[in-house]
Image 1 (cartoon, rainbow, N blue to C red):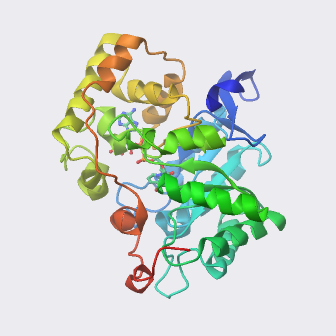
Image 2 (image 1 turned 180 degrees about the horizontal axis):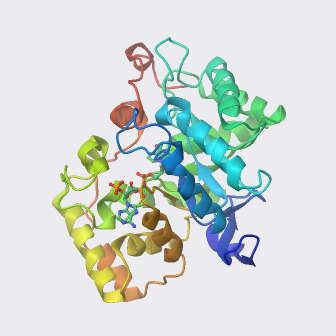
Amino acid sequence: MMADTNTTREQGNDSAMLRAMEFTSLGRTGMSVSRLSLGCMSYGSPDWRPWVLDEAQARPFFKKAVEAGINFFDTADIYSTGRSEEVTGRLLNEFARRDEVVIATKVFFPMGRGPNQGGLSRKHIQQACEASLRRLGTDCIDLYQLHRLDPVTPIDEVLSALDGLIQQGKVRSLGVSSCYAWELARALGHSDQNGWARFVSIQNHYNLIYREEEREMLPLCETEGLGVIPWSPLARGLLAGSRTALDDKASTTRSEDDGFARSLYDQPSDWAVVEAVRDVAKKRGHTPAQIALAWLLAQPAVTAPIIGATRLPHLEEAIDALNIELDEDDRATLEAPYQPHPVRGLGPSAMRQAEGPSVSPSRNKGKRSK
Ligand SMILES: NC(=O)c1ccc[n+]([C@@H]2O[C@H](COP(=O)([O-])OP(=O)(O)OC[C@H]3O[C@@H](n4cnc5c(N)ncnc54)[C@H](OP(=O)(O)O)[C@@H]3O)[C@@H](O)[C@H]2O)c1
């Protein structure tokens, strides 16, 4: 019950508008994060993905988020190949107090074509961290996350390099993203054995259409006290009810381009979940996006979903979803159509299409990390 034990509701009127945001601790750290995180993959440069908003277009989203009390922002070096970090750093500097916001970024995917431009070697981690600090315009990253685990670099090299960043004051806490539960359990064991800083959170793929994380990962996180910050909480738009079919390529700019979404969600039961969300939304007088978020926010292991917003109402609806409580009937309707999925969204190959340039084939030839 991590998200619930120390959740507080803060009222304030720092800005003209009344703020009412829920905060909770990130895992077992004392760092307070809002129960929504703004995902910054959507902000940077449309040259990277046509649905990405540039800095001018992104400005109102950061303003609105900060005014609403959101203090948790997630980006990655690979998003818009660095531009997302730059935009995130500048706009937070413009609208927020640096000592109040929690900035999360990630390392792993290749930032260029050379053999040391990606992965999790000590060399790349140190270089990537310096580059992220520069782009974000900060001297310390609040949450530094491994975007994926590296099949080549030994896990002890990865973990000791990360611990070094903490010792140097360049990073405050460590997180990991989609991986197998056994890989995370093993990494936590190595950190404990060596006295290194351990991961405090996982950023994983978890939503009403993809619930495989409930088997192993969420119980592990609850047992070990890790924060859970799910990515693509609306199944990349499907659960928001704005798509006409699983393979819809026409409804929005993103749906035209998001082949990764189509690779993740392709079972008939996935569409049945979308319809169940629409039914509950209609019954409760909310939007489908709000119902899908309310369901995720109520999962005991979940700290804060990382939302994506390309129109301001997306963000406004997400903020309002914090006040929605689903009853048992609603939850049963939403959960009934689910059918198990093959494991998806883990590992370098799964993310090539979605997140950036291919991982160099030579890196993939290596054995699993030792
Ligand atoms: N660690 C990882 O591997 C990983 C992977 C993916 C994402 N992430 C993180 O997770 C964040 C969120 O990912 P995501 O953008 O895929 O999340 P998402 O919330 O599942 O999808 C966002 C999309 O849903 C649609 N949408 C959102 N609210 C809506 C509303 N109220 N009404 C109608 N449509 C709505 C929009 O689609 P349209 O633009 O089509 O309108 C929006 O672009 C990213 O920014 C990133 O920080 C991490």
